[in-house]
Length: 217
Image (cartoon, rainbow, N blue to C red; front, top):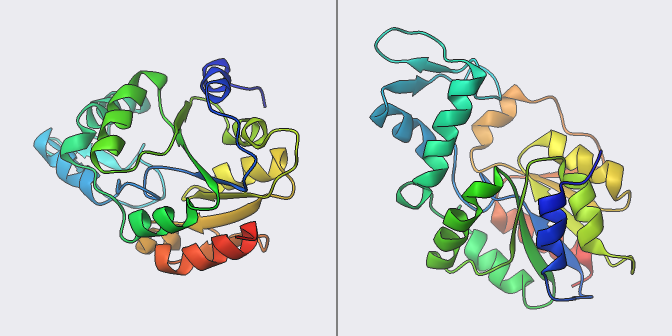
């Protein structure tokens, strides 16, 4: 997996930090996505049927029932991210957990989204009081986490709702502590069981002490 050069540039802008590292996905980990997104779709004349853990193949034009293709899904997602401040709120318990963990760990938000949405998301996170560094990537997350960690081998924990991102982290940082957290746990039914080395947590209240222990905080 190659690095995303823009992500690498963003990482180089960060201040040096040798504290334990906590890397967090944003959508459905720090900000709600699955709950507000169907309401957004309705305003655009679409509806979401969750028949599998993906968007393509599950979004239909309400009037015709036509399932929309990948290019249209990408465009609608772009519209949603442009308007995210109207729709996305902090996931339950995240603000409190991060405030506590951030006293002794470096927290970095790593979101898989087109770089052009970074400024809008940065503004929205700041408005919500989530002033942690934000990185966007259009490629795999694992190389970015390895680069973030640096050469010193400090402890790393990574939280994501997408198993593929957790596996990418494992491939790049073999000793990372991996946590699978989903804002909507009903979606777990669509996923295969998580591998033994990934810790599934139901919510931030369960996640926070486990992350603290993993990072030795």
